[in-house]
Length: 270
Image 1 (cartoon, rainbow, N blue to C red):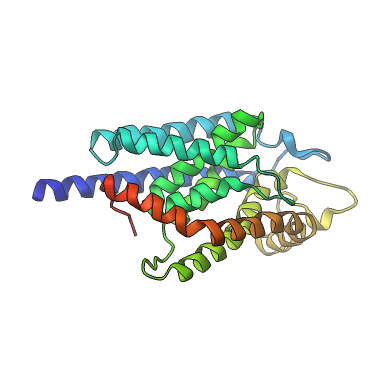
Image 2: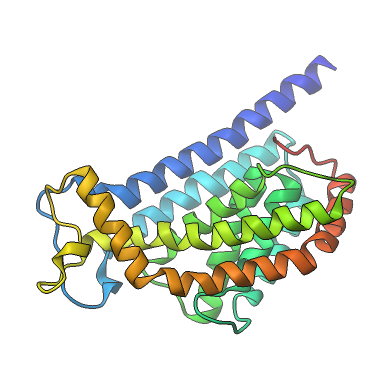
């Protein structure tokens, strides 16, 4: 019993290390431009943002995330069945990304949200990474934005593992999932805008753009104005789509995944 307990403790520590290291990398990647005095800004398409450092962020995600998976397997926390399930769900999520919908709607989030909800934060984080990466390669969406999308999608899956559970109240579960679908739909867009916002400028609209040396309060005010003016309507499509998918289809999928969790002896990290 003591040996099992020690192994479980080590596995949980490894899971925490995977999330902590990957999230720290993500926070640095998203926010380091705000501390640069000589940031190169441009007036035009934002595809050039992070063009130099994006490959390093992607490599770091591979090392921290999937290196952690290998170590976890060595400790007995994951096995081939777990990885197979993650690969299947990741591919399914990637395919769902191409379901047409309004604005920023993407069916991709359905899978990391439910995967994280059933199997826990670490599984949800890695599943979000996998689903986004596979979908990017499938749809030709590879670019400097991809590792940032992987991080943001992973965080959605991770946070889903911390949602409250109401196992005997399916209606409540459906409402909780739907509410989280709305919130995560907006949060994803809110976070993702940060990957390019500090690199933009426009002589005629400086009140909504970042400039080096800007104070924290003024920066937040400008970013909120920028988000409301450029993104909130687009993100509403994602938020509403998430809510509808999760409300009407979330509970049956949770039940299905729960059966897999029981067979795989999953222990969900609260």
